[in-house]
Image (cartoon, rainbow, N blue to C red; front, top):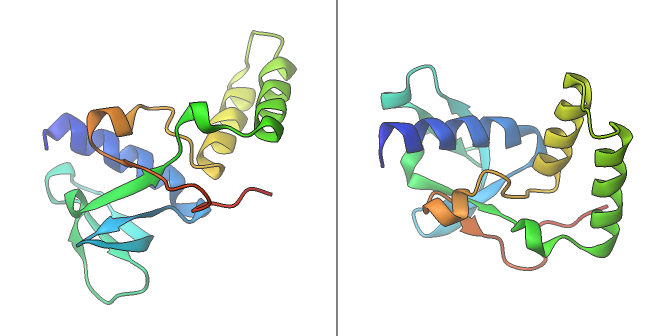
Length: 127
């Protein structure tokens, strides 16, 4: 994993922490508990509530493809996008990113880059 890839992965999973992101760690599905990313080269994660830290590159988050958006999610997403009238102030932009993170969408193409895995259908329930 390159330094740039690691930096992108850390940035992405930090934003997803409040939403209970799951991932593959040592061949098993775990929920990300916390991350310590003060230094890119030594960033560590904690999964579930284990009392141990692991290198961040041992965790591949499960994310949803944008193309797998349900009809209801698509309607909600379009409503959020249109609320900014195509000129999104920073607060509107943050709302969109938060919504995408909450719904576990891969808007950074991490799956394509090999940094994340496609979430199995039903892994994340939407409300």
